[in-house]
Length: 120
Length: 109
Image (cartoon, rainbow over all chains, first blue to last red; front, side, top):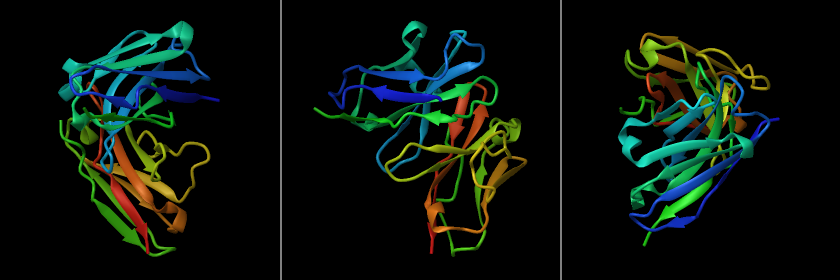
């Protein structure tokens, strides 16, 4: 059974860096084909894909946010970490991590989400 | 890259069928066979209901079906039920990752 859960600060100040951790079980990011993605959703708005990382260290980023994002994995801890620099109130959202596989990039399993508010 | 275009809302009476469109371009919907659809209830994480354009994951109701023609993908919910009232998002594979639609709120009258 695949499960994921996001951890991170509920509140960050503008210009600060956000660090979110996705802890997962039921699969390994050392196994061929496995991947984890990050998706966010501002209050009342649509889903927005941010980044993803595969078992082979390949990572992909949303073009508009590429310069602010970094995604990394710790296979031994079953964790994926997303950092987003220079946070702005417009980045206030629920941040989800989700399991995917290379090829179709559908997200079959999701964490419950971590609500992040950017405010001074 | 702009979000895929979906109608903001679609409504129907119980038992009816409704269809949600998802329009993109040749760089997304029209260029790949990897279209997925997600159902999201308020306050919950999205749930995958369609993958690879037409396939349903195990456990998803057969009332959900989907297709694609050119640069438009479509999700059909047949035999509409009260439990289908939710937000629905399409998602397309793109060269650098994925692109979501703007979402459609389905209301059961």
